[in-house]
Amino acid sequence: MQPSSVPAPTGVTSEAADIRPTGRLTRLSTSRPLPLEVTDLGTLHDLVELVGGGGVVVLSGAGLSTESGIPDYRGPDGLRRVEPMTFGEFAGSSEARRRYWARSYIGWQRFNAASPNAGHRHVTELQRAGYVGPVITQNVDGLHQAAGAIDVTELHGSLDRAVCLTCGEVTSRVGLHDRMSEANPGFMERFAAAAASVGSQWGEQVRPDGDIVLADDLVRSFHAPWCLVCGHDTVKPDVVFFGESVPKALVERCFDLVDQAGALLVLGSSLAVMSGYRFVRRAHREGTPVAIVTRSATRGDAEASIRLHAPLGETLDRLVDGLRV
Image 1 (spheres, rainbow, N blue to C red):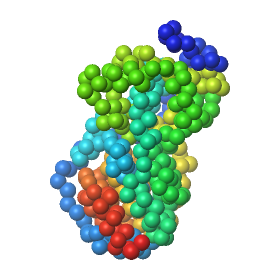
Image 2: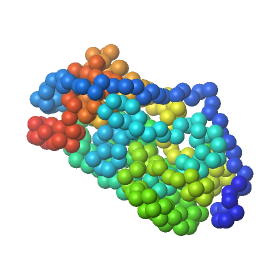
Image 3: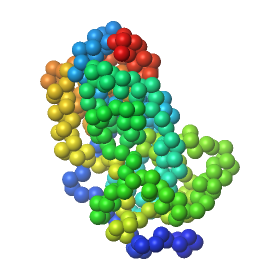
Image 4: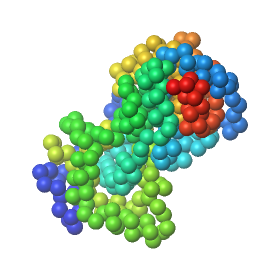
C-alpha cells in the first residue's frame, strides 16, 4: 500500500502485484578480473586502414558516454564499482521497485540532460561518410541517435521508455517522470537538503542506467509509478536489467549484422558480459577483423586484431582526421 501521507495517483488500484522471474531468464553476468597491465596490438594507422575499407559495424559500450558525464559501471580491472539492481530484485517486490524508482527519479534528470560527445559525433561522421554501417550499442542513453546516427540497434533497450510487466503497456519516460513528480511533491527538495547535509552532489553519483545512491528514509517516502492501464505497480524501464535476457530475435539480428560486416569496431566496452562479447566471438570465429578501442583491458582482447588502449574522443578525432572525413 502507498503511505497515507501523500494521496495515491487517481485511476489506479491500491494493490501491487509481484512479478517473479521465469525460467526463460538467464543471468547475464559476470564481473571478472581483467589484467591491469595492457599492451597495444597494432597502431592508429592500422585502425585507419581497417575502417577505411568500409563495411564497419560499431559495437559501443558505456565508455563511449563517459565524456558526456555518464560514468560506466566498471573500473580498469573490469569489476563493477557499484552493484545495479537485478531483474529478480526488481520483479520480486514492491519495495524493490519503490527503491529503484526513487533513485531513478533523481538520477534520470541528470542522465536525460546529457548531450552527445565528440565520440558519438565522430561515429555519425564515419557513418555518413560510408565507412561505418549499423551501430549496435549496449548503452541505454540514446546519445548515438541524438548525435544523428541511423540504423542503431539498442541491445539493452532505452531509458526513453517504460513498460508494464503485468499488461505490457508502453509509456514515455518523460510522461512517467511527470506523473512521479505529481505524486511526490517536494521530493527533489528533500533530496537536495539531505545531500547538502552530507556534502554530496547527486550529479556525481549518477550511474549508466540513471540510478543514484539514495538514503533509505527518502526511499520510504517515495510513491512508485503505477500503470494507468492495469493499475499495478509493475512499471519497469524498457531496458535489460542484469539477470534478464536480451530478446533472442534481437540477438539474432545483431549476429546477422556482424556476419555481413567487413570489420567489427568495439568502442568503450569491457565486454565483461556475454551480451556484447558474443559478437566479438562471432566475428573472430568467422574471420572478420575485430578492432577494440577502450582504456582498460577487455574480455575480447585475445580475439582482437587491433587493440588500442586509449581515450575514445582523442582516438576517434585522429581516426576521422586520418580518413579525412
